[in-house]
Image (cartoon, rainbow, N blue to C red; front, side, top):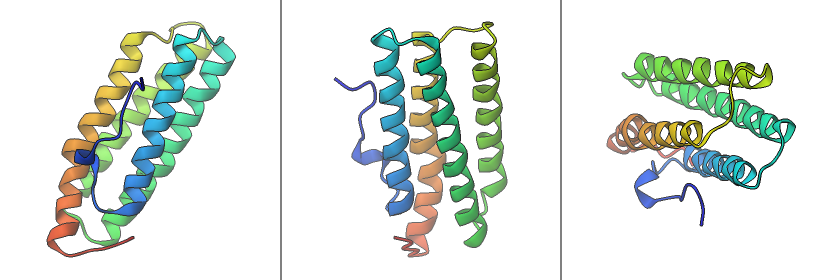
Amino acid sequence: MSFMTWQSTFELDIKEFDDHHKHLIGLMNGLHSNFTNGSGKEVLGAVVGELIDYASYHFLAEETWMNKHKYPGLSQHQDEHTAFKIKIVEFRNDFQNGKAELTIEVLIFLMRWLTEHILVSDAQFGNFARRLSINDH
């Protein structure tokens, strides 16, 4: 059973971002799988790094889209992205320096943040796109 499962409620009807979210969920499942299988610190660190890199790519793509379409919630959305990136990069640095361990609590935090962000914040710009009939597929 997967740690995170794609749900139809996650759909924004913007294919690029739905695909990004599916990939992020896949990365989360990979991180969880490596964690539960007892992978070493090097492997876990690499997967965390991949998650950070892809999240950064995804956040920039969302923010570029929002700017292009003059989404009124852009600033607040950027703030959420920035706060998350700061927290996860800080965790990665502490993990690499032996000051933090990857725990189920960290995985649950990541899962909850991603789920809530998609269902609340991203859903708002998905609704914005629907109202304006923006179909960036």
